[in-house]
Length: 129
Image (cartoon, rainbow, N blue to C red):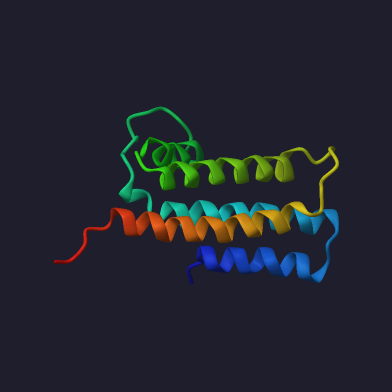
């Protein structure tokens, strides 16, 4: 059985609906980011190839959108980088206080990202005659 970005974002939402303690908020934040990452991955073939550059897979993905000449793509890159920062904080900075509104904000960013990706696909898919 495969997991999709829709499954991940649904799980992120479910986590904070059941109990909004710090652990569930951190987990929800992480799942929301990975939903965004995998959703962006599905449109990455419309972006310039940067496989020759030495970088991690997450940075490579956001960089591919940043390299694309459209504002929409650059906006996608910006959102993805921002979401990753929150995910890093949720996963690695466990001794620091964590704002329990973060997952709600990331889920909203995911919705914005989805709209931008639909726009991006429309801008970069050849039109039929």
